[in-house]
Image 1 (cartoon, rainbow, N blue to C red):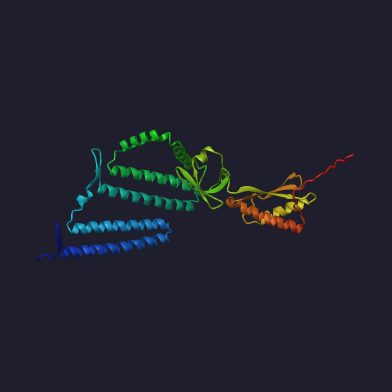
Image 2: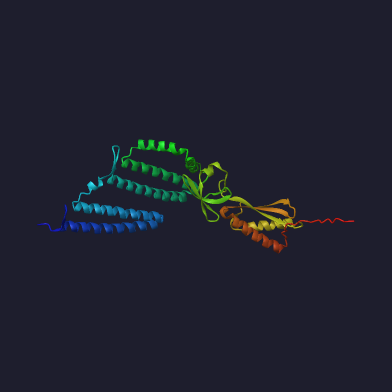
Amino acid sequence: MKEIIVLHGNNITVTLFQLVVSVSILISGIILTIALNRLVLRFGSKNMFDAKFIRFVRQGIRVTSTLLVLALILDVLHINYHQVLDQAIFSNKDYKVTVKSLIGAIIVIYITRMMTYALDFWMNRRIIRKRMDRGRGKSFGQIMKYLVWLLGLSIIASSLGLNMTFVIASISALLIGVGFGLQHIFNDFFSGIIILFDGSIKVDDIVEVEGTIGRVLTIGLRFSKVLTRDNVVIIVPNSRFTTEKVINWTHNMEATRFHVNVGVAYGSNVQLVKQILLAAASQHQEIVQNPKPFVRFNDFGESSLDFQLYFWTVSDFLVENIKSDLRFVIDDEFRKQGVEIPFPQRDLHLRSKSFE
């Protein structure tokens, strides 16, 4: 039976059978892509995968299915696409970069990125199930992601035909040449490695750097992100954490101690003042009762009896709000109990000079 020719052009002849098969492949590819996308979306939502990761996987499915469908159709039409894949983009006597190797490098980047998402998901699950320290777990996951990227870049370099010995030697020479001008960057880089390994600063720690208090959001190799109490994210070079004085409010124990200063007038009932202060601390939900709050009679001031109310809390990031709540309650109770809060007073003595 004679084949029906649908299209005939320069070196291309398409028969009716090839056209039907090509359309069938295209429709099957579309149906399979939609089914896989829905399956990934349903599975990811059920297992509470990150929305960004689900979107990334679905994009990969669409791109992969499109390339496969295109390759099958070209094969059915007897169009030699292998020559296009073997076409050199750049070449010299040492190495050659082809379209195929470039596509392979893109695939490796995609797989590497997917593995980093999988590492994040695995580490988060492990932190929850094993009750690991979240900060140390995040730091360990960050190191693992750097190793995965290092492996992926090594595979890409090999697929592009690069000589790794030559690459390492070139990078070493470059680093020596610019090292003196980039000392701060290298200092931040190695400081980041030290922080990730020794765990002195971890994710979610409350730190004070140069008078600024904030929560550590991320720890990178060169800098870290810290969220301040004003809801502002500041970028802190890692060398600040290793070379300067840094207060880590959550390093030693889960709860941190703070205090509120209170002054009352001379002649006040100090035992009543103590009871009011302890009652105010015991009523606040954010103040832990173990260790118990206590009151210290600090000093006989110039115009007041000075007390300090000490308390412990795990909400140290917003401790200023807790202090404010305590001051409101203490002031209200002082008014009810008749305890006077004095204001600074000065006695002024006037001497008059008599004239004869």
